[in-house]
Length: 257
Image (cartoon, rainbow, N blue to C red):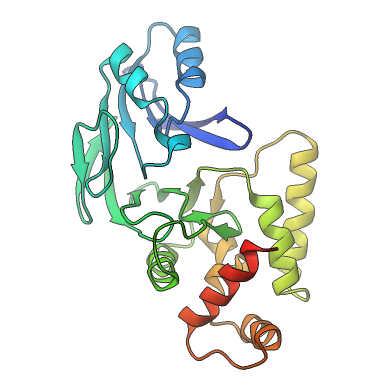
């Protein structure tokens, strides 16, 4: 039985901590800062950190890797096509790894960065999406093209409705503000905004989301919807030809929202 806990880092990052209580082992996803993981391990001094999973090379995701690896001997799994500090296992699309007895599938999802990967657990329907798919949003295009990110999101959106999305940042409320601007008449977005706003006021995190909710409220997964296409056509002054073009216009709008 594996449980998942969020460790807060920096202003809005989450380091996902997977716990195997039977063997007192943990794995972490994207430890940009070693300190929250070290603090957890100090409070659970009979547990060990066995694995570190990395989605992409940005420092707020890898900054704590080398220190944690040095202190614990944890094995570092990360994308083959990026420079990942301390990486022991270089991963490409279609790879399968075992962590804490869990089988994880590797998807290459370029866009935010060119070598970005996501980890998917098919039995539990857990998706560790890094900075590709966010709750109600998606990552900025620092290296990839809109077409690449569109295809990456379509691939993740094809996973089962019950898939839980463990993304790396608490951006949900600001993403939903943008979603309301894109689809002001979408009741699911309005209701989700009210719910997340209440959670954040209570100090509760908004994650994980699930893909059914994302398909109903995340504008970047709704590029085929008439309401989204009409809003973008109104903003652009002309109809957009493909869903990929709709996505590109959405992402450009969000960048300056």
